[in-house]
Length: 556
Image (cartoon, rainbow, N blue to C red; front, side):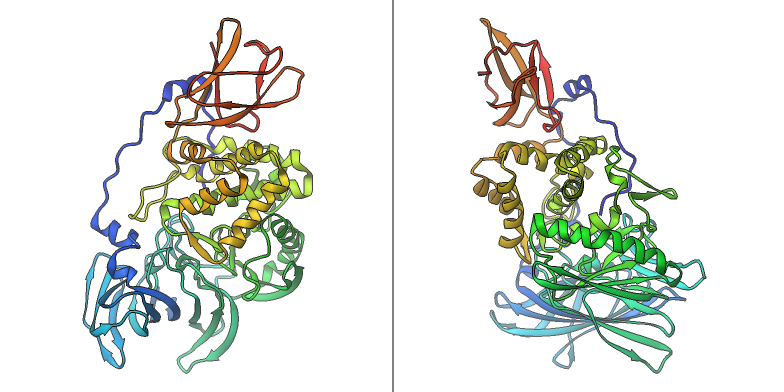
């Protein structure tokens, strides 16, 4: 999800040179941060989650929930104790294992369960957590998340969950980190009669209960990360379509408020099939044919909930803000399509199919998805339009802190992971200088890491290997350092030289340069002076491709 922020003007060159590499203030983290963010701790690493059955009843009038989560798991080592997660304001009623209640302790939002006997490595086992309480109410979903309680324009209840970053344990018990995705899940949501719940995957069953509630059972057949699991409750109506894609017939299901039905049919009809066509071309098959594709109207702007994308863009093109659609790139290209449909659906490939193990590497989700917007533009309006779009995104870059966050504490890096990430991927494409190879790399990522969780090294290593170019120092510069590298030109004995300054140690990057009116050529630039071997080049007539390269340029 792209954060709702004011567009920032890129700093002028004078500011770039003054900013230098001042470093980032050291952050202080608590034990609570580590309990949440460390996926390698023995009490988490000891079990691999295989299946959840989440069974939750929503008492909307009292903003109260109650229910249970069944955990089915495989032991990865011998253990007698494990950790799961549930926000401290929600009560653990009991933890049941083979018919008996287990002792447990709580610390911050972590719960530690002790088993009566050793769970042997390799064994399949299960336990169930019963819980209840008033979950955190979202103040400004999806950015400040939790559970959204509101009403539609007809005063009917309208409820949604949105918890990326904050964590799924804000409303249900789970192993709340990204490294271990559950293999499949049954999501049972009980709501007051007359309302419907729409969650991920496919609807298996609707059951009228005896207490004035109706239960909706949704089954997810593919691995899914915790924050993607959703409940959307309202007076929904449904319509559907199909798309003949790379893996056959893909079901398209749409759930909207009844009075928006005609608007939805028009907007979704114009945007969804073209989006899938473009992204299957660039990234490979939609990753969740078994679970289908859904758009669900929500009271918040949107979220990439796997196989059930939350949609709140008010059926306008662009990015909805203050009653109208705006173009985040400032180029005009962003007003030709529905931002939320394209961006949030792009996450099905990057974020849902490929998921970062640590929140610190959320750039893997957001950089590629932000870049997908320009590929969508390119598909329908030409390569130059796509390049203009991604260039325009520079207006949203702040260069405030590194894109990669600190590991093991559930902390994201800079919001620049969106626009700066998109720009750096376009730079990689420019350097590779082979669009078919670039497309093969993007498709190869989704094939190699299909339904997997990944690290920084997984993604950067794959691009290095498949491109045949070592981008290690390039990734370090743009992901671990906040400032831009500056390309400095100097004359020495009648010859023009260049090198990088204000940069990460060891930066090496080929840059496109030319003499005015000539053809671009690549010049390999490092931190020591390199001769610009272009016939007739001088300090006065050298031109650098600053349209595709996000760098500073200084001529003495």
